[in-house]
Amino acid sequence: MLYPTSTAWQADAAKKVLLFGMSGLGKTYLSNMLRDDDRWFHYSVDYRIGTRYMGEFIADNFKREAMKVPLLRELLMTDSVYIASNITFENLAPLSTYLGKPGNPDLGGVAFADYCARQDQHRDAETSALLDTERFIKRAADLYGYSNFVCDSGGSICEVVDAENPNDPILTALSKNLLLVWIKGSDAHRDALIRRFDRAPKPMYYQPEFLLRVWSDYLTEQNLTEAQVNPDAFLRYGYARLLDHRQPRYAAMAKWGVTVTADEVAQVKTPDDFAALIATAIDRT
Image (tube, rainbow, N blue to C red; front, side, top):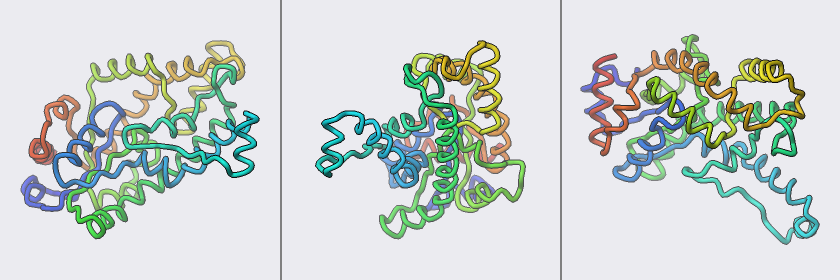
């Protein structure tokens, strides 16, 4: 672990952490607070995925839809208009929209084979974006003068690493350069996340084997063909199972770092509060 003691953590003038856990438990809240209130460089893995590694896929998808409109087609064919994604740290909708939802195209769904291909693209992109972290630590210091660094990882980080493998290349690289911090939710948080997701299902990345299992189960249980699937209904069906699937994977990752609870994160208001919380987490590890 990068910081073997809380004393070492508190004494370091160039603190480096990676936050991981389910979306909605405080990763981006902490990252934004540290960036806005102190001299911390905020590296968003999802933003990196959506700009550097999947930006062309996203823009091409926009163009594909625009080509269906005669006026826009003519403008695109003559290079008269420019179509691009306006993705930001706070708005990752272009990435989610591209990932899509499998099912009935009349309900906004995409063919399951296309959906799986986009999932594979996301996996490759997330792997690359995570491995870029070390370079951005150096870039943040050399180019912008930032000593402190927070990596705001995506909720699917646990799907692209093997925490049980002591030689996992991604976790080895990350733990060498940052303190890995799991934001752990309670059963109440799990229920709240499910309720929030039910109101507005959003596309997500799934481990391939898990996705195939859930998709097959859904088709069988509902007695549906692929073209009959309501995309939002499928995502709702799989979300609670996804949370349960990821929990042990996060717990295994936590052995590479420290654990804080979502309730503890909710009490953090300042960078000093954050530093104190991490010190406490190191002491109890």
